[in-house]
Each structure stands twice: as C-alpha cells, then as structure tokens.
Amino acid sequence: MSENKSKRMAIYPGTFDPVTNGHISLMERACHLFDSLTIAVSKSAGKSAMFSFQERLDMVKQASGDKSMACELKVIGFEGLLAELAQREKAVAIIRGLRAVSDFEYEFQMALMNRKLARDVETVFLMPSLSWVYLSSTIVKDVARHGGDVEDLVPTNVVKMFEQKIK
Image (cartoon, rainbow, N blue to C red; front, side):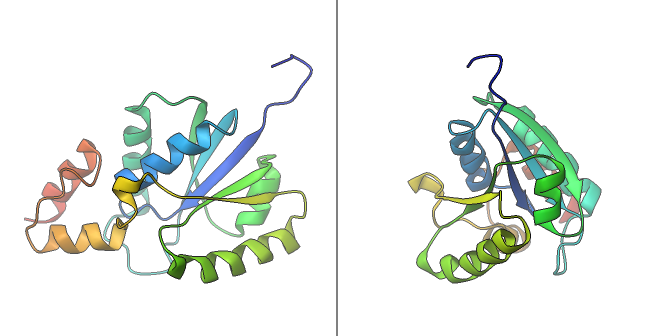
C-alpha cells in the first residue's frame, strides 16, 4: 500500500453477549478486506444481557487478541447511533453478519437507516465460515445454562467466563 493512500477501516458492531467463534470468523473475514477493524461492543444490549458491559468488552479484547488477524484490530465500547460512531472513527464500512435468510430483513433495514444517517459509510454483509452458520450468542447461552458443553462454540476465555457465571 502506498504511503499516500489512507487505510481503509471498518467497524464490526455487536452486543457480543458472549463473543462466539462465529464472531471471530467474521472478524477474520473482515480483516482480509480492510486494513483495520474496530470491534465496537454496544454498551446497551437492548435486551437482558447475561454478561455486563465490562465483561463483554474484556471477553472480546482477549478473544480477538488471542488470534492472529490479517489487519490492525481495535476493540472499543460504544453507545448511541452506530452511524455516528462510524463517522467519528472514519470508517468506510460497517460489517454485519448474516447466518440465514431470516437475518437479512432486519439487517437490511438497519443498513438502509445507517446509509441515511451516514451516506459515506457502506454496510458489508459477511457470512461466517460454514462451521458457524448455525451459531448465535443466544444459542450458546441456552446450551451453557442447561449444562451443555460450549467449548467448541466460543473462545477459551469465554468458556471460563461461563464457568464463573453459571455455578
């Protein structure tokens, strides 16, 4: 990359309650498309979160730090409008994950609203690797609450957080 060309940065927002291997897969995929990726952990989950904001932030920082990524990675917390955050951070894109057709309608509406609020920021839809298409934080929490093994579904640090949370 020439020194005169600015780096292309994307934002990957989410609740990450908890971060899963599907989230990590999307981070890896996004890093192949952009020079840097900011993972933005939403302070208000919009729903009843199992993990506190600080726990979610720490889990994402550790899980993403444990992986070798093909781009610069930064983890931040945020609240408010994602479009405004993207503009403040000078992002060229917002990364959103799609697992199934059922995700598309909601994500499409959000992408259109973000475009209205921040015309210069594109939304890029990515699918996780085939291994994680079925995976969601909600499913992982349900498995963990019922005593199921989540070791293959989440990073190691998240397994430990579940062990502390569910006794």
